[in-house]
Image (cartoon, rainbow, N blue to C red):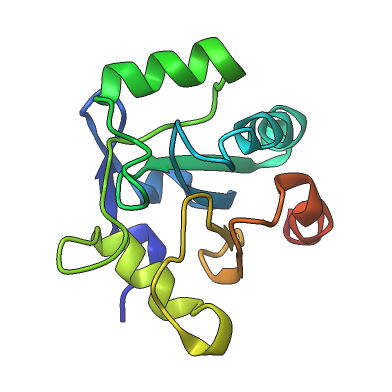
Length: 159
């Protein structure tokens, strides 16, 4: 049976990163986009990361262009956008797919572990969030409309 630490992904610079590098940390994994109505959530994600990284929280951003083509830029453009507009310092990864035949294996795992409303596994939109505890268990899935600050209590419980 797969564990979250069995997966790897390319970071925004194209380097392979093993999720086992984050073992022992709480993870908030988010599919992101630069031109979405929820894009201002980058600010909340960055604040949570800045406030709780020293306590063991890692926010991992995975850009995705599957929803309304709202992430058309390449990795350099995405990185620059995040830095200039939101001062993002949490780890960002290369653009991936989260649904369909081309879905990244990490997202297949996350969807299996924490289906959405009515048991639907598909990711509905940008900024769907998954909270993973220090042991690598997927604790919860949050809708795109759930703001980062609204899950602070859940994050604190698993830190």
